[in-house]
Image (cartoon, rainbow over all chains, first blue to last red; front, side, top):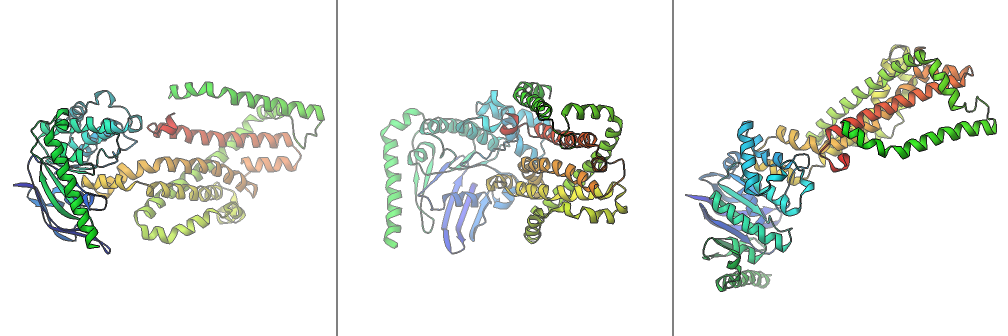
Length: 257
Length: 260
């Protein structure tokens, strides 16, 4: 059974068509990146999967049920570009937020939070407030929070977009390790070609006006990926393929208008 | 809390020096220029009267303080409730908000002589409580409403991703976001409550009210007594203000701008 199944998804905001004719299936344990120029609807598509935006056409199935039911069942965790931490809560309490809403008993909650803090290596910062952390640390808290209730699906909307290159590469490595350990399925929105290729098992290339899938590229680089992966020829070949697919999609739009 | 106060103590030294210097200068200038007592009494004379009349002043002060406190509690409480309703049902908010903002500009204190007639001819506390409450209402309403509606959209989106209900979002996001704004409103309200109570009493009230005491003493040329009453009104106003500041410090310990 696929974790995510999109059939004929379309989304119209007033008069602009944000998404059109999107079909996509994502299997258990996949790491799928959505890449495309701004305005191609990749963030909208992510929110459609998460039932934060309702599509105007098509059906979304998550874990074999309607997206709404999946949201109510808390089947996915979400990480936004901005960490979206609550300043009035400590790091530990921010991570505990979804567990509190799910009414998990306090003792279980605390144990779970501790586990997550260790996972993202922020054990010493449990009682800090978000504004006392760097951007990279804040994003790690946000990831810990998304993973805290052990969701089958992780939705990430340009989570490292606002970070510097060094931090981004380190967090890429950490994310891959977390993905391996947790065995979850990840849908990852990015506009960095290198990031998409390095992380993913599949890269979904999108083109704008209207937002469509223009190509799906399988990334067959060996697992686990390491720093060396970035320096090998197959990596560069895939980066080139994704880049060409992006340009192709772009040119098609230019010709049409 | 002890740490909170202790750390502040050293920060207060410059202000304390200015205060003492101000009082000394006041005293000195009155002696040097031989200022008439009815224009401005010496601080030492005010202090002596303050001590001599302490039981009468204390009674009057307590009476008026109760009015201010009651008005503050009722006005602020109603304002917070009203803000919650207006924030929750935007249509109602859109209909009422322009009036709330306009009402904020009304000199409510001008109604004092009339409210005295509405409530037992001004003999009981009710009329001053009403004035103080009306004065407190609008700044707290406007600030609370601003706080409740200044939640970032992504904060709400996150809660939606957890399938959190309206009440949950309200409790866990809107209220904490609004708290710094609410305290800003409450601090303004403390000052207004004291003004409302004292000025309300200028238009009539029982003899043991602070405003009446200040008014009657100045009419019979007991200016040091009147000044002692004014000083007490100031001290009570400051005490009310500081207790809200302390409450704010405790409630917003997470906030970098209050814990700093």
